[in-house]
Image: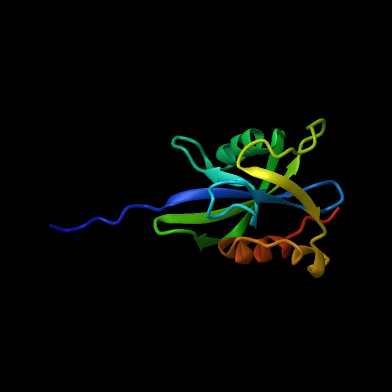
Length: 142
């Protein structure tokens, strides 16, 4: 019997920027093994959604915002076995409320991507660190 590899579960995350070019970091409140660590907000892609649709939905559910997906950040980062992280840059749509930690998070922080000390001031999840580094290399200007 031949085993067929299955496609990984895609977790979409947003490098969400405000109008000042700051990146949003979200501190996990659940599950327990991730609580207190920081990540880019997002969640699992649910068929038949596109990654962009999933990201808009996740940001609405987790943060209560109306966001616009801008572009994919090149790369893919392994999470736990069978899961991969893919990141898109995004921005708040005009008139969107400010983000609030509604689901799976207990604190949010806007970080200046050009300030490495500020980016390092939060305890990023290990698997998010390379994704954050890739995202900040592509910070939208203007």
